[in-house]
Every structure is written in C-alpha cells, then in structure tokens.
Length: 538
Image (cartoon, rainbow, N blue to C red; front, side, top):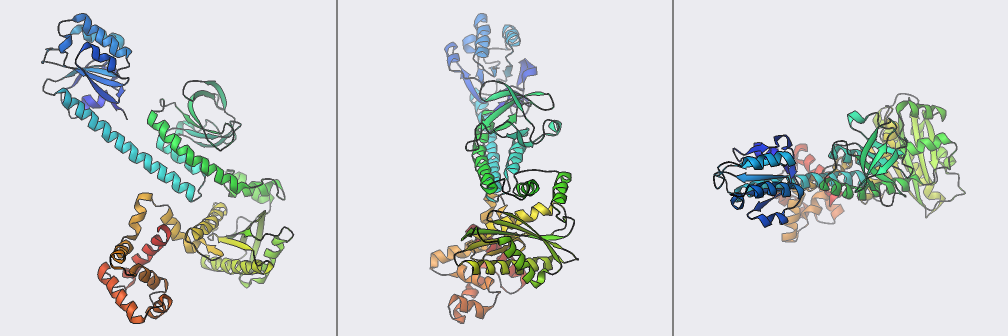
C-alpha cells in the first residue's frame, strides 16, 4: 500500500516539511522509507521508497551530494528527505539543482524530528491504509460471494468489481465479444453487448491495447477466467492509470468466484436449441440471465410468442429432479391440473418448457388481489405435485412460486423469485415439494445481509445456546418449538414430548434469561425474526 509525498508534506501531522525541488511531483507515491547513513547504503534502496538522511556523510563533498541524487533517481527512489540544522544549515543549492534536473522530489525535514519519528509516522500511515484496503477487499469478496450463492448472476458480480475499482470493466467471451460491460459515465458509448473488441497489441504484464467499436484505442489489463472457455477474460480499462499490485491481487481473487458464477449460469443453460422456435429460446435465456434485452426488444419477443404480458400474473416453476419419463406429455398433464383447480378459473396459462423444467405463467383475466393470486398458485402447485407423484412413485419434483406482479420487470423477477424459493427451501432442509417466495421472502433478505452481521441476527438465541451448553438444557429447542406452534403451550408440549409443567418451567427460565415476558407481539416478533435467522445460518 502506497502513500504520497503530498500527504507527508500537508497531512501527516509533521509540521514544516517542505518540498524544495520538484514540488510539481508531490503526487509521487511511495511504499516505504529507508535511512541513508553512508554512501554505500544506496545499494539497499528499493524502488518506490522514500530515502531520508541527516546528510552527515555528504557534508563537505559537493560531488557526492549531486551523485547521491542521481543514483537515487536511477534506483527508482520516490524522493529524498534531508534534515537541516543538524549538519546542513540548509540543503545545498547544488543538490537542489541536480534534483530538479533529474526530477527527484527533494524534501527539507525540520531538525526537531528524528529520522525514527519520520519513519514511524510514515509506516503507521501505510499500515492504516493497508488495513482499510484489506477491509474493503474483504467486503468485496463477501458481496460477490453472496451474489454467487443467491444466484443473482454474473452481471451483478462484474458491476460490483467495477464499482470497487472505479474503472470500466468488461466481460468478454472467447470471440472477444462483449458479454457484460460495467461502464463509467464517460465510457457509455464505448461498446454494447455482443460488440467485437479487437486486441491491437500486447504490452507487459497482461496489458494490451484494444480497439473499441467507438473507434477509440484504450489500454487495458486482462485476466483469463479459468474454466470459462479458451481466452474468455475480464478486461479492466486503465485510462485512470495502471492498476496497482493490490488491485491486481483482488481481481485475481474475484476471478475465482466469477468463474464459478459463469459455470453456474452455463449449467442452468442446458441445451440451448431444443425449443419450439427461436423466440422461446430467447425468452428462456433472458429469464436465466444468459441474454439481456431492453424493454422494446423483450416486448417484441413476447408479442411474437403471444404472451399477454400486460396482464397481472403469477409464475410457477416446476422442475423434475428424478423419475423423469420422456414418453409422458407433461405439458398436457399440467394443463389438466390447471383445468382441475377451481382457483384457476379466470386465469390464462402460458407454459414454456425446457427438458425437465416447466415455466408456467398464469395471467389473470379479471382483477385479482395479490393474496388471492398467491393462494391460487399454491393450490395449483399442490395439485401438480400430487399428480406427478401418481405417475411414478420415484418421481421427485420441486416447485417454486414467484410473487404476483403486474409491472413489466416482474416477468423476469417472478422467475428469479421462484428459483430463490426452491434454493432457500433446500438451504433450510425443508421436506416440502412446493416453495412459495412470498412465504420465504424474509429469508432472502437475511441471505443478502453482509456476512459479518449475520451472526448478530440471533443474539437472544445465542444467549440461550450458551446456557444450554453450560447446563445441559434444551432452551433453544424449546423456544423454537414454542414459536413454531404459534405460542400454544399444549401443542408445543405435545410436539416436544414433554409434560406441560416442564414446558412452563423452561419458558419461565427463558423469560428470566432474555428479560422477555413472551406475551405480547412486541415481545414475540423479534424472537420470531431471530428464529428465521437461526434456521438459515445455524
């Protein structure tokens, strides 16, 4: 992690440090400090270090004063600081002129600071910068990990990386076509999706010059994405300056997660070409995050397949995990379930299928409330699961239900919600076949919490957990049962196979430990939310 000479002069807390040569180069950055106490010490100076000295060994040798400036510049030194009034009353004019000539910043250090004080101040600052950087990097890794595990797609990962770097970041496929581009405002016209970007020439350290569709040539840093096909890569533009070692390191860490996200998207893609027509394929790929369309393009696709997207709708996603029979007409079977379900009267179904996956949109022909839409979809999903089970005893199905919507983005959002509902159900170890997002939405909010704060979502339960471990009790199990059985003492005691009085004694102990009466909604609601978090993260 590097600091700048400007910080040392203006913001370090060390007073009266002056730049007396090359004051236009105070933005020069350095990552360490070295003390020069003899002419031979220069051999140990590293690139991008700041050298400081009392000047004792240069006192009466004008040629040595000039030579040390030249040699420090050749060694890649960031600058030279010289103490005054210990040996030099002021820095010799010859050193100043030589520093201006070779473009090496020259600093005047006040006599009342020891070199160790200067060094300690610098290293404390560099350590603080490094710590802050590590915290930000860890936050980035946690964020894109959450994006991956919640299946929110590769595009969001690319945008998060671009936001962190404050640079334009582009995901390219094996043909150097733009897949996603997270662009800064001044790069809005740089390229579009599927634009071909030409590599003009290679530079050092994975840097190249590229020709973009807007006819501009830009320098960029490229990283190959392992497992994502030959030459698929991430391109980071370097208009704002070359990437630092730290930035390249964090990109390498992000690439591993991005690679898994691309593999995740590819596994969801399956065979892209077994559809009734190309428009069904386009819609399927759009829903799975494999293609992006603007509203106008998507509306044209939906009109071509005659989907009544203007109407209020709800979506059911049925996936057959085991026992699939290629000879069974599952589409007709689903149509039969819709005809059988009385709650489906007044609904217009639209079914899109791909292999073992069936996407069922249900459009309301008359005005229906959101609770009615969700209830009707739940009843239909139950009938579908029961009907599938009668076909084959070994058949395994999972059904996700999105939320009701009437806005245009809800077409895709409902599909994502249905997928999330199934995923959350699996995380919770639920044995049901039907998972409704409106019933599991709170879990989704919890999953998107920053990783470090998740354990803080269940402080009260962790308090009981510690008591259980110390006293061999079952207070956590008791509280969860009490909440699950709607605060009914008799039903809870029956479910836990304990006497009613035993349960009451345990509840009294819980009240005592948590300072909670377990009587009003204000008492119970926070514990219910903690129970959600505990089930999800434990």
